[in-house]
Image (cartoon, rainbow, N blue to C red; front, side, top):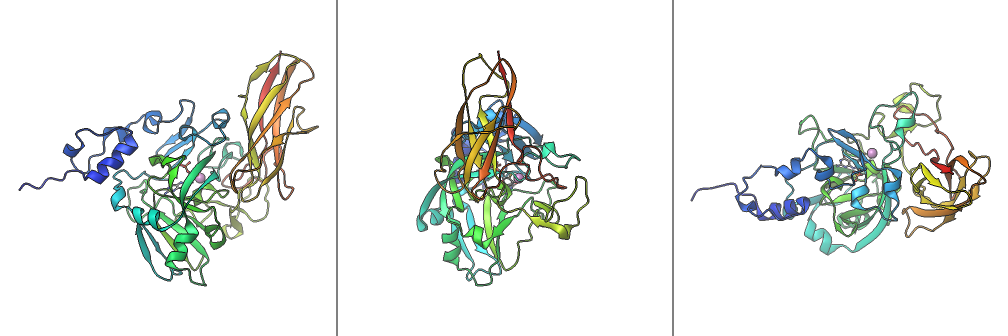
Length: 406
Ligand SMILES: Nc1nc2c(c(=O)[nH]1)N[C@H]1C(S)=C(S)[C@@H](COP(=O)(O)O)O[C@H]1N2
Ligand SMILES: [Mo]
């Protein structure tokens, strides 16, 4: 009998999931062919995202949200920023997908199929805030190379999966364990198969936190391809680069993980503050861990107009890495005075918190509404750009919107 490389059923159903429709004559599709729908050059169709999302880069894809797109308490898939370092995997066969736990400090190397992961370990769902370490980079001066994120590289989604801790403990953690590092299925832009686009990780204390998940669902559905289908590490409150998409392997390391973008100056800031433009030696740079306190006004849109005598509702979210946000204030006089906003508690640890206020304006004219969050240790957002650093990370300056009272 003639041997033909027909696409496997399992692959077909996963492709159909990603495309969002059955591939009717899929059985006739030759193996190794990427459906055109997955090569769509139009990112809005390719990722099914809101038409107001902003594309910063197409090779690899980097797309950010605008403040008003992030108004929902739980960010919808269509409004989430996308940050890829390499090429997304295409031929994903979910039935053949495995996750391996290995490394110097694993007691017994283990490999799990997706079905085993789902059946063997208890499932948890948490709202977890993910913010790119470089969110806000566009404001740094002298400028920092890299994606010029403004304010839209953050979201808070509902993640469902198993606890990383449960899986690591099932394989066994040696006493000398220091760090975990992830390995994923995306490929290096150069095409060099020996290079990984990114392979980061976290210290054991973060890895073992209750909320650190190996997730297989986002917002109640399979994770969209762009966000890591079919399996993703999710470590809320830390630079989102720790949350490895398309997860294939986690190594329990006896030293700080040394994968791609863990070494050199990636995701590091000067251990001590430096003057703008300073050249900083690698040995004086420290790895970013918990993200700093920050907030975003998501309603109304900047440029809102209201009538004199009317109060305006403002609302948004605030988050503070591993900490909780203690309060949020707003100012209409460029920080001379501040009033407090109503602030909700987080639905779970590491979820962003919602604030709102009724703002009154004394008379006709142009105003700016500024929001400022303070974390549970009493640390507030700076009004303007904080500590310059060579790679432009951790800009948590206050967000502001323009308002005209007419
Ligand atoms: N495998 C893999 N994981 C990854 C990345 C990547 O390029 N490949 N990018 C990281 C970075 S830098 C960020 S900010 C987040 C972005 O997640 P998102 O695309 O769901 O917004 O994923 C992280 N995980
Ligand atoms: Mo990132």
